[in-house]
Image (cartoon, rainbow, N blue to C red; front, side, top):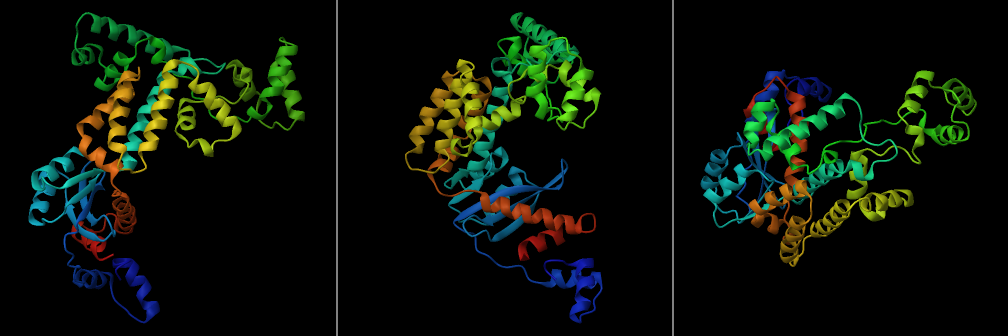
Length: 393
């Protein structure tokens, strides 16, 4: 009854010799008293979507045991602060990077220790590192080079327009209005010191021609004038069963000139962010070439590795975090600087995250179970039934 409720219970219960309607099943479920749990010493707080981009709710759990404490409608600072004032006693509050939750805890429990979630810290650095890798595509791009065509021309023109306005003293907001671009787009162009930092490598997906790349490159080196039709016949005998148009497009893009499969900025960032012991020998070679492509990529690799060491909690990590933020600011890595500014704004919670064993992992697990419950009752029930199922589950 607790796991299914409604129609699902009405379909299952007759096999157990119990015949009830779906409305009766819901009434019986709502009649189960909610557990009366005391406020724990360590709270976990996180939000989940009732209707994405419109309505949200907040779940409060015991961060040590995972027991559900309460579910609140809304996720604003006032909602959470009001609940915390009515339920005092928590000494530690684990949360994500939400400024609303941070303000709520400061208002209601000024003496409580706030702990940022380590996963969100690492995820934030991964996003920043991915943008830095993409910004330095011109340094590590393979023989396919940078993206060309009308889109590349538009990128170059926008970079010159924005930097000309900035040199004339025009603010970012005014640049956005004059050029009809989003503010974040203007910021991205303004942060790029050169046009190459805003250009990207082509977004090529894996192709059926990739296994025959070495043969195509060797044949074109031996006989530059060999045509696509002749090459198609040769690779057909090797097992290729794709179309001639796919081969022609592959050759025109110059992908056969690569000594290895094309590396996108996302895959390049993945090499940088993966544990070194989990990389193959080929991947290590590509990572070494990637990090040695320019001083900024070398600095980024060092920043990522040193921050990864901080993710394992240790009492000495507070001093190491200070040293890390200083080193990150000195590197020419604008996107990492943005991440560091976010750390500085929430430095106490970030420090607690890397020095204490508490984390918000169990809260994320409750949210995962909540998604299952929502799918079972999507569009057929309200917040009260959802709250009841979460708390009695």
